[in-house]
Length: 312
Image 1 (cartoon, rainbow, N blue to C red):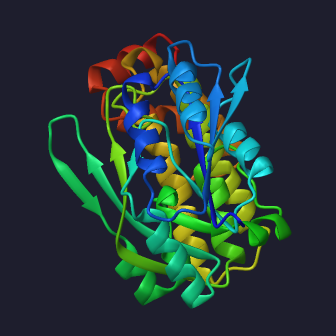
Image 2 (tube, rainbow, N blue to C red):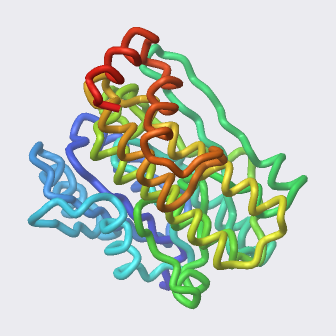
């Protein structure tokens, strides 16, 4: 029986959440699926949980990395192994509604769409639940309004292969390529991807320098290079550049206080050499000082102190 959907799951140290994740994919109402879980050298018992599901369910295949290669590489490894007509991506600490794949697969086939997407339901640490639905924007404004919420999507695998669409830094680098080449993006407001926020989530309140540089700056630079080498309407190009700027500052504003000075220097260098984010100077010292002064965690006293110490 041909595989209709391949579900690709990168896994790293998410044992407390992984059983619920795997139960949700094994219970999908669409029967002709495969589940590819990529264990990225977890140091907890995530691998044991995956191997248990692999033994119990013939739809499950486990890839085990001896060394940590990060999420983008895991998703690419899953893509290389996938046989499904469509693919979707699920993080190991999240889970899907049991009819997620069926609803989106049927919609994609009916509309002959390269991408079909659902909705994100976020479970916050305080117990609140937030539904993020950008579908109306996409329906009203077209495919380029699909920015973010990548994991709510089902993607035609042949279309990905023909256009050499891969993960680079992380999700948005994949998404910007997929949306650019897609014939259309169709939406279902009743297909839920369930995002479980916890203290180790990728959007946690404090970012390390490494995480910010690797994810946020890496994302932003990829977007900047991509939109400047591909044909976009001016308004769409500006939307993507605004997104790049937002990514730069998202993690920057979440840096620990001890890392802000170094973060300002890194950001100033990146802005001077790559994407200026709309600032009116390319002078790295001036940029660094402006960034420090406007950082939400700094004070006027801290600014004066660090200038007198020639740290910025």
